[in-house]
Image: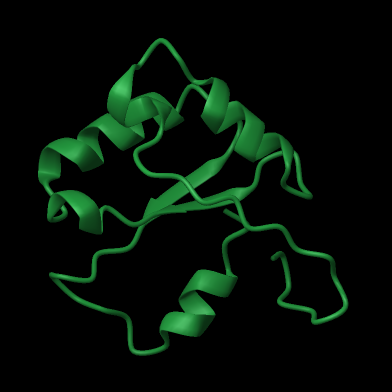
Length: 94
């Protein structure tokens, strides 16, 4: 969703736990998702709510995702939800 335009065809890929959380050597799912993006270095937003936003999961995310061509960030709901959640998420492609 690079610019939030309504005439772009979009795809939703639902996952539970990604490669970086289960097997650091197996980044196939992460690469597949990145390849669906419309840019060479898509903005990726990690939302670690399933594990209570543990610091360990954030460390794993950033240590693994830096091996991939993307611009990573994260969104924490338990600690502080952004005032404009929609705008925050639309800045990301993944």
